[in-house]
Image 1 (cartoon, helix red, strand yellow):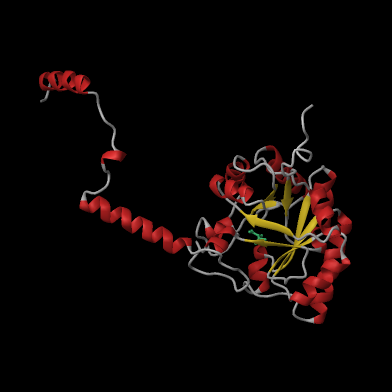
Image 2: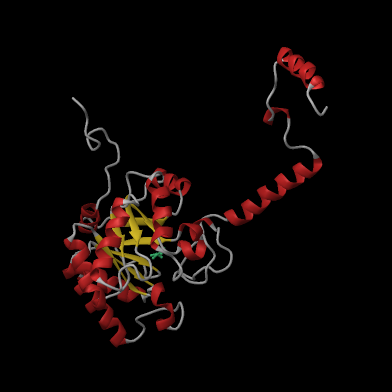
Length: 295
Ligand code: KIV
């Protein structure tokens, strides 16, 4: 009899239902971004629940100042790489700027492309009440949707910069209403970015679906961070709420310098990095090479 993954002790595939179950059982949900196959493999190996292929890749991988230049084709390129690296975590593709705001038809078609061409299993989009028709249309097409409230980077110019949100009672109330509306519209979870910790906890308690916080305090049902921040890979700007668990940028520079130094000193490549050639083959080659035209 073949053992089910559960029975054999192997970790179960994470789905949107797992998110709900974990919330009900008060088990925190762990999410990281990934943009390439190696990171996806490492995230899976580390046992996290979900991978978000975030449009943050525009900033941390491609070097743009904002996420606005990221396109559907750019996102799908990275989604495919991530999907080739991880199976167990829930794979969530981040819908880029203008891929869901212009028309419902665009929204459904583009969300579908994340599943059909990108190997993703769910999508995330930014915004509250103004996004309800898009959320309903995408969920109606059978595609799980994660919402995103608070600091929504695709609205950076409207918000006046990457700044904390929901700092007034009115804005906090509006965010709570938006969260409840997104839940009603069918979202399976909501990212809360850069909002006061007390509000993060309050909203989390009012929702049946989990909140995934980034700069929204410990009272959220789960946490998400940008992998490059966790690894200490992104030197230009690190948000206050990010925590670096390693300093890989410094490690990269150290390794690249060591390589350059060895190349310049003629130390690399050493014999163990070089291919040998059978003596008889060499003799045959050398004899023929002497007679080759141009020698
Ligand atoms: O694009 C992204 O990585 C995100 C997370 C920060 C939530 O939206």
